[in-house]
Amino acid sequence: MSKLYMGFDAGTQSVKVAVYDEQFNCLTSHSLPTHLHYPQPGWVEMSADEFLEITVKSMAACAQSLREMGRDPKDVCAVMGDGIICGIVGVNAEGDAVTPYINYLDSRTTPDVEALNARGLEIWGRETGNSVASPMFPAMFARWFLKNNEAFNRVGVKFVHNAPYILMHLAGLKGEDAFIDWGAMSGWGLGYDVQKKCWSDEQLEILGIDRKYMPEIVKPWDKVGGLSEAMAERTGLRAGIPILGGAGDTMQSMLGSGIFEAGQGVDVAGTCAMFCVSTKGIIPELSKPGTGLIFNSGTLPDTYFYWGFVRTGGLALRWFKDNVCKKADDAAYYGPMTEGAEKVPAGCRGVMFLPYLTGGSGEEKEASGCFLNMTMDDDQFVMWRAVLEAIGYDYMGLADSYRAAGVDLNRITVTEGGSRNELWNRIKSHMLGADVVRFRNAGGAVLTNCIVAAHAVGDAPDVRKVLSDNIERDAEYAPVPALTSRYRTLYDMRQKLVREDMKTAFSRLVAMRTIE
Image (cartoon, rainbow, N blue to C red; front, top):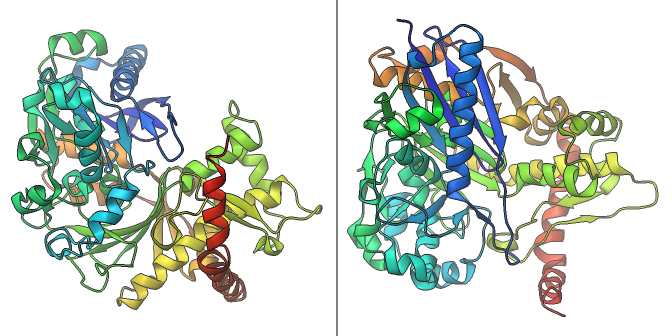
C-alpha cells in the first residue's frame, strides 16, 4: 500500500487542504473561502464551525479527486493541520463553539490592554518574551469572554484555537480533551512560559483566567486521536488514521521557507502581513516595550522568532480589489492592477495609503485607513501601488528595530500568497535595502504539515532534511540604492505625518464615527 499524507491550512481568508505522496509531490488540493463579520467598529468575528465545515468539504473534495486519478483515499495515513496563532473560540463540554471565533483583526480589547500595560509588570517579558499586552492576543480575548460572554460563563469549558477545533472534531474529541501545540501556545501572547513550554500559573492568576480553561499543550506531531467513523464517512478517508496535534500557520510557513537557523528574516505575506526574524531565544533589546514586536516559539524544538505586523496587510489588498474596484468575484484582477502599477514611479509621487482598516496600534492606536495626497492625475493604479507600498513602510520600521538589535537583514525570504506578486517583491527589496528571495513552494505551510504527518508515522525522521530536499529557489530581487534612498526619505516624512501631524485628526475622525 502506498502512503499519502493530508494537511490543511486554516487561514483568515480561506482553508486549503492538500494531499502529498511519499515523494512529497502534491497530488491534489482544494480550498474554500471563509467569511469575516464586523458587528461593531473594531470588532471582527468568524465562525469556528465554518472553519470545520469547509475543511471537511475540502477533505472530501480531495478524496474524490484521488479516486478520479485512480488513487485510493484510504491510503492517507495521517492528518495534520495548522491555523491562526492569534485567535480563539470558547467551547462547551461537547467541544462545540459557544462563542464567536475572535482573531488578531479584532481590537475590542484595547481599553483592557491599556489598563493591563499601565501596571508595568515585568513577568510578561521574562516568561513570554512579550513585555506588553496587545489587543491581538488570545489572552485578552479570553478575558473579554469571561467578562462579557454569558454563554461561555454558563457552559464553557475550554478556549481553543481554530486548527485544534477542527482536529478535535475530526477525532470526535470532547471539550475536556482540548489541546494546543507548543508553538501555537505562544500565540496566546501572555499566560505561559515560552521556553518551558507550559502555562504560567502566576500569569494566569494576574490575567484572571482559571487554569481549567486552558488546553493541554502537546507536540505538533503527537497523535491526539484517530479519525472518527462519522468523519471517515464524510471525508472518504479511513477511520482511525492518526489526527495530529497541529501547528501555527506562521510557524509552518517559516519552516516551509527553509528557515531552520537563527538570524534569518521572513516576510509572511498573508492576511496579516508579518515580518519575522528567527532567533535562538529571547533578545532583551527586541523584547523592550515600544518595539511593537511579538515573540513566539517555533514548531521544532528550541526554535524561536520575533515578528512585527501590519494587522490588515494582506486583507487591505483584498479590500481594495473587492470593495474599491468592485472585483470581488474576479481573483485574477490583481494582475491588471499590478500591470498598471508597474508604470507608477516608486513613491507614487507622494500619494500614500495608511492600511489601518481595523484600527492602529501602539503610538498610532487611533489611526484609520485612508488615502492621502491625491490629485486629479491619480487613478486606480496609483492607489494600488500605494497600497502595496503601505505595507513596506511599516516593514521599514520593523527592519530598523531588528538591525538596531544586531540582526543581519541582508536577505529576506518571502512566503504566502503575496509572494507571488513580482512587483510587490521588488518594492519590498527597494524599501528594505535587502535581497528578497522567493522559493518555488512559497506558502508551503500545507506541504510542511504533510512532512510533519510523515514524521509522526515514522516516515520522515529528519524534518529539516526532508524540507530542505523539497524547497527550491524560484526568484531573487535586488535593491536599487537610489530607490532605497527615496523610500527612506518618504518613510521619515510619513512617520512624522502619522505620529505627530495627524494625531489630532485621527482622534477627531474616531469621534465622528459615533455621530448619528
